[in-house]
Length: 207
Image (cartoon, rainbow, N blue to C red; front, side, top):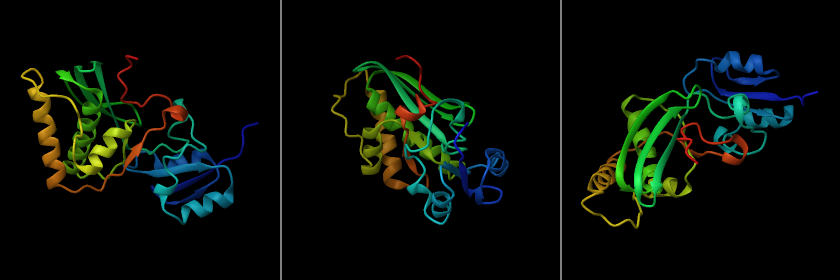
């Protein structure tokens, strides 16, 4: 028999604590930017509901991979970004997809002589710029700790040397850094927990 779970909806049709997934789903389905997560005890759920959702969302506890992602706490309406690079350096590309249904939102590249970290950085900034343009206060997931640090510092700290072949990549970097310097954003950038949730939805599937 499956363990009993309690569902906290911080942002949805009617925020609250629910005792079944069907009740929770009714509150978050189709609600852009819904925030919710499951807990193993009612006491913990009530405490979480009265607290800051970002203290609970994105943690490994109680989360699983596969079809239950949304049921187990991955944020509905969020964007996932990822990059791929065939070598280091090599042909680099990146993309973003909606976590709910894996619909691709953007794809850029491939560009010659890039790196995976650069692609991950550019993907996050691309997602931030897109969300600001479309007034979307949604969470953005990345599986790259380095890229998240670079975005926070507003600087792509790559050691890659610029050449005539990868000049377009450095133009993208310059544009991304400029955007970060000149803009603010409300979107939380969260670490995708690959160990518990499987590959990030934006993964190119080339491993």
